[in-house]
View (cartoon, rainbow, N blue to C red):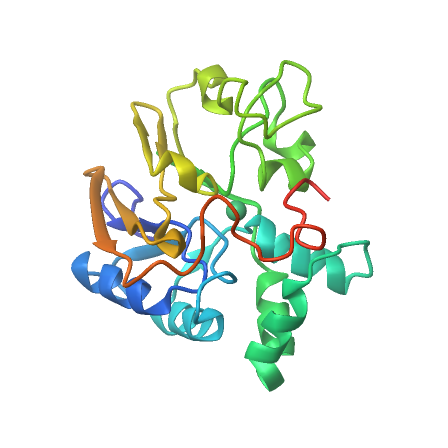
Length: 237
Ligand SMILES: [Mn+2]
């Protein structure tokens, strides 16, 4: 019988975005023991930071499991022939080179969420009133706020999705770097903006301990993360 989730130490890493050096430091700071602890990540392992390929190689070496972020979902959809217009995709292909097919095969296996007895991991969040299975994957990987209808999930004038989440189970998410982390009894946000020069954060369960390492530098401007806004539209496309 496999070890109970309640006794197995679980480390969940926030959005890495190509910050492979910080990922290595954070995993060490958490005292991760491969084969003993479980290592998870919130998605958006790649892009914007300097070392997307290295981050993926390291993640594989560490035995890290990840849910799909919006950046991985863009790649998967693009390669399936769907209309995804992201200029950065070519840059990622160039970085991965001959390893790109293996990388793509890997992220195609990543789940949209990982649910255990004591936590639920999803990249961006939950759409109020909808079950995970009936929620559009694009919404699971991009929601920030809730307008009461679901037509605008990224308007900062509206309340965050987690104001509408009232269940006991802990939801762990990433994606929303501007918040620099969220800690509520039933919600923990782990994107603390490493690629924007802030820090990379991990959550250790069951203790609910938060561990962070500082970013080595500012890799992107948080206000304008993509150089060409006409081709790097961050909306739900
Ligand atoms: Mn994201």
